[in-house]
Image (tube, rainbow, N blue to C red; front, side, top):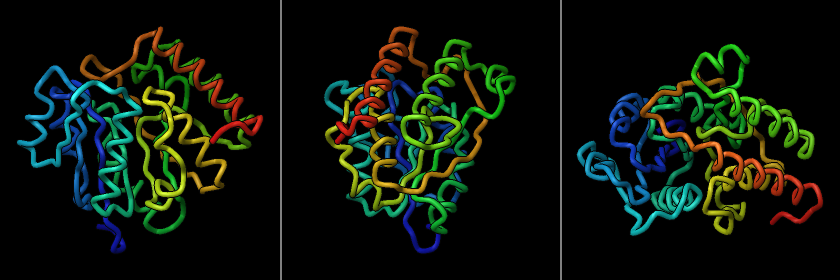
Length: 237
């Protein structure tokens, strides 16, 4: 709880058993509830999550990253969240920083907070981000900033926080069930002129951390360009 606002962390999970406990243990005390949505994992993610005391929802079939987030947000809203923080349970993003995400929203500085992994090229690459992903991230972010009029350092982070109002006013339920869901949500947020803040987060790529391959990355990148163009020409929802 922060400023009498209920804080719920949502974990969109898929085969996260090796990193889940580290992620949960590092979450700050101000978190009121943790919800994990398991997207039909092949490991013991759901079992471990229950052992850790999390609220667990299991998909009957693998629906995709966007579908997982949709379930996460529906559950968080139904559980009375005032601030919803989404973080991947693969320990790629530092859970300790959730405190600052919640405080910036709880103190009404911003409506949305993003964790940016891009502070410098040296730091990002030394943290393990593949060069092609770094370059794609830079090119897409520059393009998205140009189209949207924003000046964000990264549009493609997997650590985000939202004021409740944001997730009750934008039409995220009709978005893609795949990775491009993230881009669609951000353009919807920009369209409604919500205040977006950023916090630098360390880059942590390692063997157990989830990461989509080159071809999935390419599909995601092309999908993001389409989303940006729809926004530019007033065709987005």
